[in-house]
Amino acid sequence: MGVVNVTPDSFSDGGRWFDTTTAVKHGLHLVAEGADLVDVGGESTRPGASRVDEAEELRRVVPVVRGLASEGVTVSVDTMRARVAEQAVAAGAVLVNDVSGGLADPDMIPAVAAAEVPFVVMHWRGFSESMNSRAVYGDVVAEVLDELRQRMDAVVAGGVAPERIVIDPGLGFAKDAAHDLSLVAHLAGLHTLGRPLLVAASRKRFLGHVLAGPGSAPPPARERDAATAAVSALSASAGAWAVRVHEVRATADAVRVARAVEGAA
Image (cartoon, rainbow, N blue to C red; front, side, top):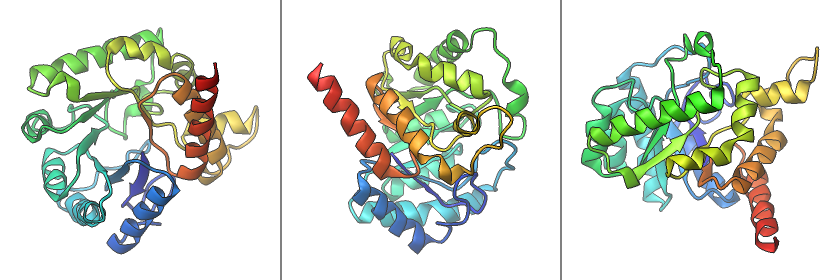
């Protein structure tokens, strides 16, 4: 899953793909590099980010979804708003990726149920402004599993078919570096939920901490692609359905090697 951030304030590449033409061109480049799916988002969810209003999110996202879909690209929409999801699906998106798992907008679950598209349910404890304060766990793996299971039950109760659900442990969302690393180490355990697994580690803070080492400043987000590819290979080995990344080629190569090793075992 390649990422197209149609935002001026993404932690990773804010502003680089902000206009529609550039964003569509970038999405096509990601496909050429090996992406099977392109995830289009118009609202930054980096820690501390403020929300964008709905009209602006629609203005950013829908034309890019339409442009990519018209080129035959398989498109998902990264949004917490039901209206954005509905209009993106109408424009050609075939999957809704909601980092709140339907918690941010009470209309999201009915909208996804009506659209009959796959729905990514991510582990989430609150909006970006406050999520760092919510990174408190006794056993992060057990608690994330339990909270995802509860969220899946709520989504199914709201009318979304169980077979349409994809789960995401929410790396970096209300989690510190140690929590993220622990979740990556136990990705295989998430299969107990019985649904495909999406892993979105690309360029995130925990990778910066790993690369920096003790007492050093983390490298900028765009210098974390090799580390992202390492997590992608680990995710593939753990049976992930997809990995969501900003730079596709390195990850596509890493996943290909992981699959080849798996096939030779």
